[in-house]
Image (cartoon, rainbow, N blue to C red; front, side, top):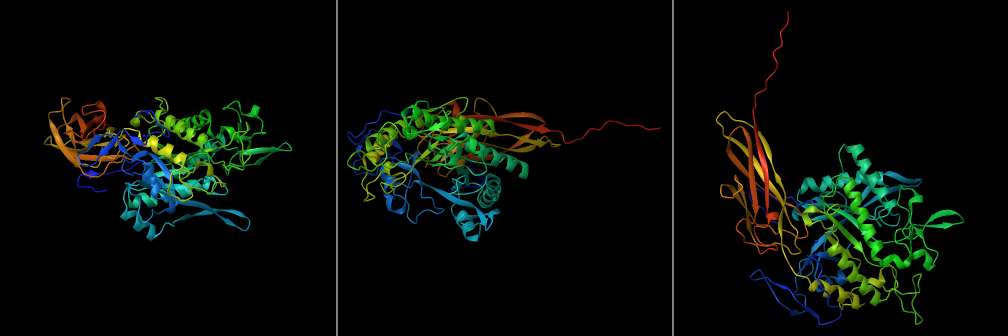
Length: 533
């Protein structure tokens, strides 16, 4: 990203779903004409990578499946590595860096120390400096023994040091907390301990630009001889085992209530259970003053494998059904429908039209069919050809309408001391985002005014950098306002004030306009008169 003087880019941190043409004519009704920045109509996409890159959708890949990112129209991808491949996907999708954090162990168990991959050294510092504005996920399932394996109290310390290491080098970096295995009462207890530890040790709330979750309804405990033992999902380190979601008894009667304490195989693609975890995460965020932050799902799909053994499949759910391509394709559509439409004025992200989730990443492009996640494969074993599930993914994304929408997050007000010549100067600004599904790549103006009629200009800032979509990144523009007398002064600000960017909704929509104040106060201190005998 580029910046000019008096422009500060601060990266902090997804259109109603349209009808999807499943497995039918593979054409995209809306595509972007990059040359004239307008929307044009259908092109054949059967073997094409020329439909627009949609920031709402993501996929996890290895280097072998990198071409699938463009084929799917995914706008974000991750490889569970801290650094991107030397050559990224053809559609220039965003890479999400995963910084692995793990608690150290000694001969007698866990130590109070931790380490990261990459280490917080000069090599990592140079990478951060040379790649400003990156998205960094600090940890991957740190709550799980077979993954990040870090107790919440230690994770709070590791997060602090890693967050500040990155931010001190690049304030525009977007920092996300680790996704936990799932969002259950046991996992929110882990988050509670992280939150409380950070507050106790550092005296402030944990600074998170982007909240992050994984979404898998996996049983955490099983009851054996009256005792609870860890099972598939495992017990989150440092939490109460009694909070765990139970494994089913492989009977359908255990799987009729999506809100009970049991997670069945059959519920792994149940949309009521899916929604429950999203809502629980957003409820936790609101309870901790974090509603006005983006939420991403950096990993989700169906983990149970599908292997056709000639007489059904290797793994059936409690109702005798397999996780076959038809079922998985339906889950792709159902989950995309939900994620595109789930909104709540009580819980959602206000800057993104109260959407609950801003961005989501499918796991994964390819796993061995009998391995964890094998039923969710988007590409065939050749790592290039899309599976039926992959075509469903691609057709859904390509059927969406690309749009941009610049929106004011908040104005930056100021308070300054009065000057004897009534000529005080304040610095005012605005933080704004793009909640469309398409990046803004062309320059535009941000103009500040001293009247609500937007005729008395204070100053204009030219914005040159690319503005990412999905409202996960924020940007800041500032100007100086001089000649101010003592008192209160209101100002107004308009994003894209000259209507240079094709947006939906159009220019003059109120979400492009914000306002703030400057208070010019007396610098004299009046003390009471005290007399003594």
